Amino acid sequence: MLIRLRAIGSAIAASLILLAQPAIASTAEDTVDVPHLIAAYHAAVVSHDGARLTALFVPTGSAWFSVLSEEGLARARAKSPATTKIRPGSLKAFAKLVATSNSAFDPRHTDLRIASDGAVATVTFKFEFLIDGKVQNRGAESWQLIKGDDGWRIVSIVFSSTPPAI
Image (cartoon, rainbow, N blue to C red):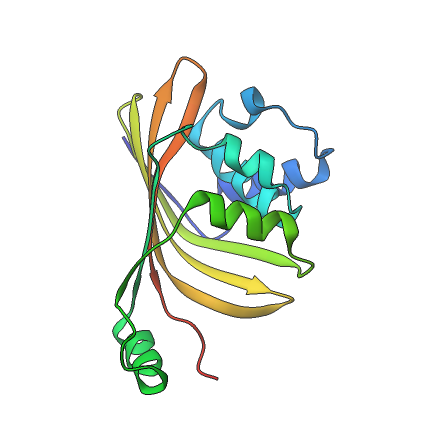
């Protein structure tokens, strides 16, 4: 099933509802369906809740990769010619950043699409990642999800990266 949601779609509306709730949402509530999982991810990042963010992923074996866009790669290589296009990351590193940063984070998602057969799902969207109100990265992102006995979990995140010109 393919669901296409516009910029202010169900997941964004759900995230606004979740943001109005206390930060003590349970993992069971966060992972009941894909839109809740997306909203919980956003709420965890905005509220600097690294533990909540981590609970949205499979406990082991997750993948996290970014690939610089041609524009981003050209700018990066102008400063450092050895810059690699494909960059592995990790949930652990991102969750630590989320939990320890004093900056205001706001991951914005548009053109959201969810494809699922009820057991696995792919979520794709365009994103802008704002830090202290300024866009620090933008691109396209894809999540792979699986549904276990305890709800939906993120298995992998892959995204293109176009940091702003400085």
